[in-house]
Length: 343
Length: 250
Image (cartoon, rainbow over all chains, first blue to last red; front, side, top):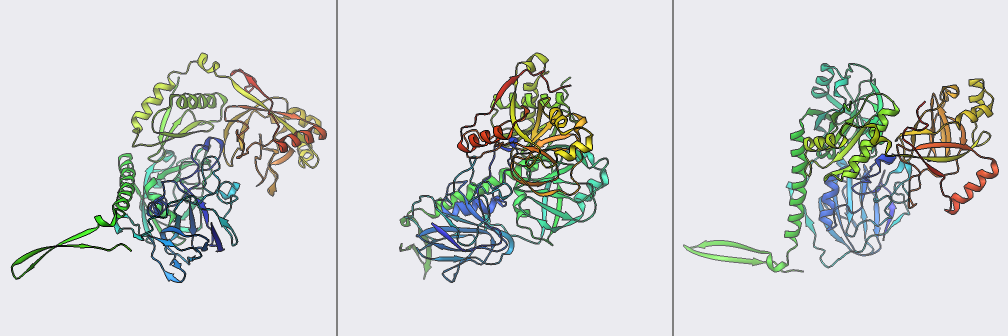
């Protein structure tokens, strides 16, 4: 069990989302940054889809009543374990009774804390993801507060070696990001100038940026006709443009349907970048085609598979972790094997 | 006759559009196509979201390419003969409603706005079953069609911050039910004790898009009795089949 001593600004239990019920008006929810969330589960040794904590802007201070093994990925909230600073994009054992404290996010705004075994809250409609607006999933359907306790699923703590995720699997979060956009489904409701504006201007993330959507501010996007349509479904990443001409990107907690024209859709693999953007950050939108979008999805999955394979390799029995060197001294070549002792 | 349009909605979204208007016939084609696609169990389809006039198909493009999926769906939908449509009857689900008073604080306003006595507003509201065009906005919220213009009433000028779950309202010429407590600006004329959405139940949703809802006025005693059954988990919704050409189109 883990206990929340002080709660972050907006910490919720999240997983891959509640897919399958949008026809009944149930939003998908789930982790906003699926890359950092997946990396945290891989480092922790969890199955894909295990529930983790999503911390926003400020992190939680958490007491671990029992020994555990955790991973933190995403924004750097300067985690400290019993006062000792820990790095983000790493995983490490947590002794029973320890306190993990997370602070203010530097670079990005969401961090994922995965605990081996997963956060064990009841699944609602097949998912543990929290959707606060309808109080669904997670812990009583709400953000965490001080005094909350969460169960951790059964797990194997035989191997608790700390791991450091290689750079190639990490993300960096800048304050000026480029997102690829597939036009449609209502790009024909905009003028050619309107589309050109979307794909050339720099937009700024406004204060109205949350799990439901990111409102952007910048040059007005011109419609060729009405800004309203007969409501239809809202896909993830959809860019709604109401009559005021400012784009709104629909995120994890978006409603299932909406009545504004959608000029394009931010591709899935790029939503993780927007999920880490903060008010004031710059967002540029670049047009892409279906082939490029599908290739990006394929590359994202390959990267996750490579990260899982890296972890499996890193945890081979210590006897296999032998480093070999070739050393030449006075013309004589020696083959040297160095085996690290396991602790 | 079956002119459908395919639209892109991200690399994992394909919109199958049947029209651009609110129309029971267009909506019938949406639900028919949804049923055909679901039954075909096409590999790679994650879920489908039927709305007024289109279907959003979420799919895995690494399992089924967009073009193949589109061709498969076009073949499945075929030419949409009327005989096939009649073969899939919808359901009519009865919704018991306590009208007026505390449960429906705006019934008197609707009556004065329309110039009808409150009993007549109720009689008109329960006179026909309403088609559930789609479910959206919030879990279980039905977008209903078919309400008489005679009881159409504008929204409240100042929305309420909290409307109890189960509230039945009118907004313009639409009628609907709030499945869960939420803020809103609809004129509330009554309330149902029946849960539209109960995530813990074996059947979490009372109805699906494509069904019809038939409101039924109940007395305070009947309301209390149903509320008791709902609380005890013993309430069985009253449900009947409707022929596809049935009472929703006038």
